[in-house]
Image 1 (cartoon, one colour):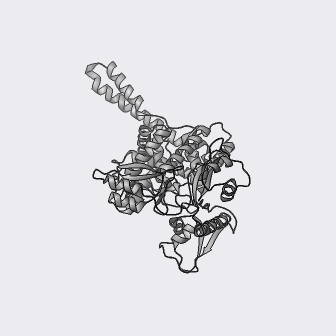
Image 2 (cartoon, rainbow, N blue to C red; image 1 turned 60 degrees about the horizontal axis):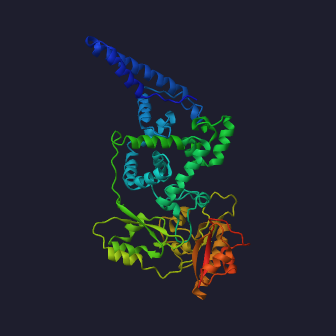
Image 3 (spheres, rainbow, N blue to C red; image 1 turned 120 degrees about the horizontal axis):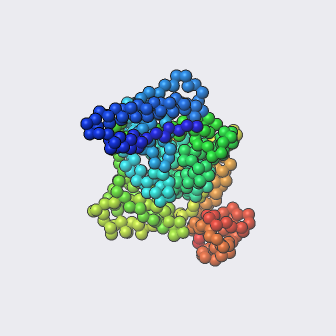
Length: 487
């Protein structure tokens, strides 16, 4: 496949060379003529390249109505000027998305994205630089979630980087009754960076890696096999990919173009409620965000906005697994008051219950679990019961209010997981009533044994560790997370 790779470098070089070789009497006229001729030749070459690719490389067949002109040549030049590590190829699909994103109706949305990007992009840039991921991939989060950490897709993909439950588990994102790290911009960005790096190392092309983020590595591998090519680029396999993915990559390229030419596209950032200057603390206690917000003299809602991963307004940190807390950086901060708040743990049960699988793509009529609301129950109480968030419940069930009528049947995710989870929650609730038992979270290290772990904690035994964690044997793997009973 031919890819448009022309740039202004050759034109500028030629201009300089010609200027040095022309006599002074004819310099101006000859140089202008040379420049114009070279520009015309280069434009003709770009148009020839564009006509050769059209929609074909994106898997489309109807190309009769596709026409490129000098404006498309300008777009090619602009994308080449922006291009860093990720190829920013141009074809009719990319053009369609650029036209959409630059339209009058879309401009307010782009303004919101630019405003929110003032907060989110520095986070992404720092993490991507640390992980050696191309900075421009940050724009993919706009395509994924419109920079909304609370968004949940129709199939259960969650957070700014839209992780499904299984993929989130694979990349060690915590999802329990207190936190959903898919919604945490820091944790989810590290996971997204790891995924991109692994995909790039496997496929050798950043656009193919981006495609795999949308449709999965399995679909990409099948597309490569169908293409019959070794190490193909995205455009060579796109016609074998799902339609959504064929659109996904052009949308990313178009979004990169829009943010590369903000002023030219007359995009003005909207205002937002985020504190742009922040500090990140690691918390090893269960702390109430309302107490911390009070110490900072800001609304609790402002603190929750900076920490969208916490479901209950509680930072569930422990010594073994400290949690991230983002706070605004303020000159007039009451350090003494804040210190007291950070060292006043909540008197709440610290039992950690694994969240249910909220992947709604599970096949079968009985795969989606339902729950009939009882009189007096609230969405928050139901969410806590099944280890999910209120936002998810509202999204899955099309609810706009937090009120729910008794007798209504709600989707609460995968039934087989929920039955096990409901049983766990029920046992945990009884445990809270019958004793003062609590739990600590422990990450298994190389060489650990159940007996060795049990000996470290008062009240823990091999038997109750196995029972609490549903272990059928004593085999442990490094990285496993265990709940350790405490008296």
